[in-house]
Length: 129
Image 1 (cartoon, one colour):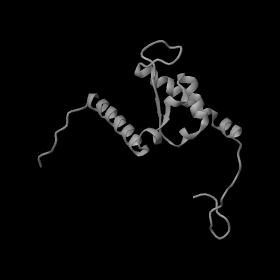
Image 2 (cartoon, rainbow, N blue to C red):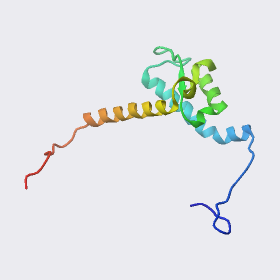
Image 3 (cartoon, rainbow, N blue to C red):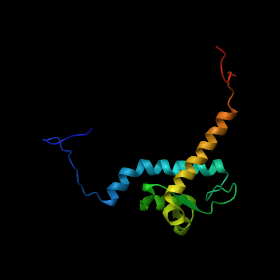
Image 4 (cartoon, rainbow, N blue to C red):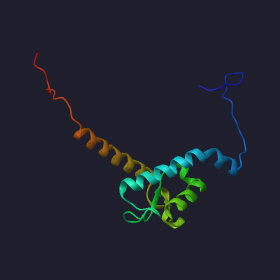
């Protein structure tokens, strides 16, 4: 529930953090983003600069609040070799809600295929009493 002041009111915290400190605190998350980007491109057969295997990546669609961080754009420009104009926030290209829903639908379809292909024990659809 969080800490509360006398009288039961929630405590508020306000602090000023420099961009440098904020990005330093986010460095582990940015490293995960880089690793995930490389893994996804490899799995999709898309070449990143220096890889040379597969067709080159032509654009990146960003979805989510963290994608508003300038450090995310810089990281993706470095990893993909794409100009900033090809790294587009979802809000500029499509509805953010639609982009998230589409991602969920694609992931659900992938999970459904995995479940459909998994071996299972046959069970009757109903039982006679």
